[in-house]
Image 1 (cartoon, helix red, strand yellow):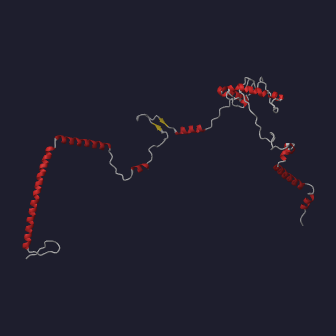
Image 2 (cartoon, rainbow, N blue to C red):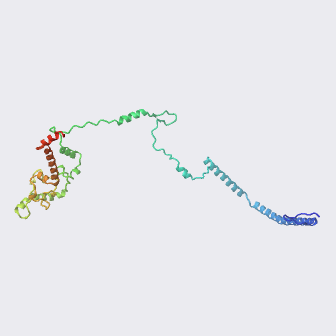
Image 3 (tube, rainbow, N blue to C red):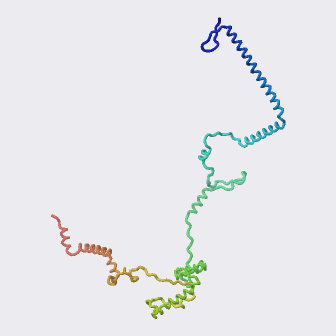
Length: 320
């Protein structure tokens, strides 16, 4: 009896008759399974063929024409895209903006003038050529100091004398200053003070009348005020007249001088010195300076004065 293994691992010894039977049984079962499997596949193929026939019947010529038009449109768009982008596609792993930041700007700024200026067309000859030596010579000549224009002759009066500063200022005001600016000031004689308005002139004339006649009021004693003194100007005098277009009336403010007015800070008459030199000598610093100078003079005189002859002779004698 021949032995055989039917599976891996530990084999079992079976007789050949049983093996043949099993093989025949397996083949029969496989045939039955194939037949059984073929039966549904045949049924499926029958159904698929029927569906394909139905689909072929549904596809029309219009549908095929639409597909053809879509294909043509896509081909035309792809051709345009390829024509616009002739370069090959570059795949970069880094950020393109970071690379552009490191590139220099394309604007070169202000360029120097070219050495050769060409014509409008390529066939024209150069229209201009720079000469560097001539340009350097022009720059060096322009840097040289140009002599100043001559001083104009001085303006003279009718008598042949040169104009004074006041006369020059009057000529300038007459020729160059407009009328509107002239009326805003009292003029150089009145230190260019602001001029009052024309409406205030009658009131100022009355105030000047009261100022001019106040001595009469003080003499009469009707005011009871101390007597005042003022410079007497008549209304017909050239200094002040009714036709004067500008007026200035003010009050003199006393300064803080030592003897400008009655004050507790002023020295009494008994403490004052007779002269300015005495006032300066009475100062503490001035007295210290005078005392030091006096001592220096006395020491220099004592070195050359009386009683120094014996000391000088003793200094000339030998020490042995």
